[in-house]
Amino acid sequence: MAEIASIKPDLICLPEVFPVAGLDKAEKVSEKDTELLCNLAKKYCTYIIGSVYERRGGKVYNTALVTDRKGDIIGRYDKIHPTEGEMKEGVLPGKKEQSPVKTDFGTVGIQICFDANWPPEWQDSVERGADLIVFSSAFPAGTILNSLAVLNKVYIVPAIWSLHSGIIDNTGRWVVQTDRFSLWVWAEIDLERTVFHWDYQGDKVKAIRRKYGDKLKIETFGPEAWFVLEPTVPDISISDVAREFKLVTYRDYIKRATGAQDRKR
Image 1 (tube, rainbow, N blue to C red):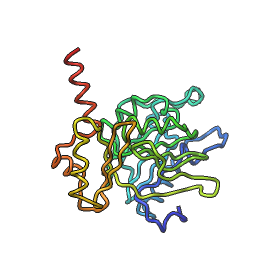
Image 2: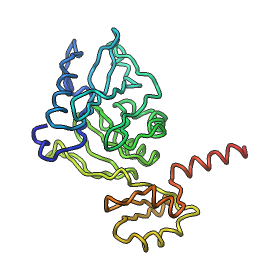
Image 3: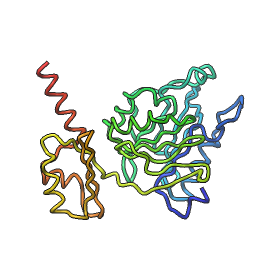
Image 4: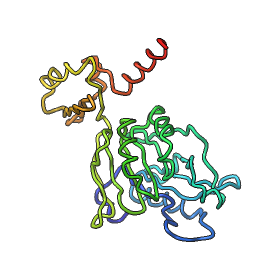
């Protein structure tokens, strides 16, 4: 945290049960873990997300705590899919359909470790408004995460015990990644970056480029039939551009097509 402080991050993500990661301890539940997170968030004026073992109502959960810049806990996510080993040790599964947490920079969803193997929960988080999903984990998950980012068109921030942590963008590419020389990494990302399908609107890309020039970064993905819009200046909103050119986002296009298919079926 002291090393990272000079960057003044908006969000710091920590691995799964980080206070006891890799330790074989009979008692892994401590209120001091929560206190530690809150104190660090207040000291460095940042949001922090990291999972701990938390006891509530006599039950133990693998819980990702979300602290705000003042050091207050503003959200929790209980691991929905604990491993069989965790459950043998008394850790209970969290309820399904948990809501993402709103911050001053966007809405954050959370998944923990073994949760990577249940894609519907990731989709549910996105449908509930998550702009990015923090993945607090013991195992790296590898290309599973790239696939989840692609399928849900969402940023994913893996925070892993060992390599690799970092940031994956909403087209499944690593923005930045830890290595053996960098045990933490950072990047500034723009959650305005939006994916569109080429169908019925790809012909508008040239007109968008003519109007906005270098104020709007445009990427095309041929095999996937996507194009991506990302502002390079703060006064441009992708939602405004979409309204102006009558664009439909990839997510809304798939939702619209699904509805039409269901009605015909």
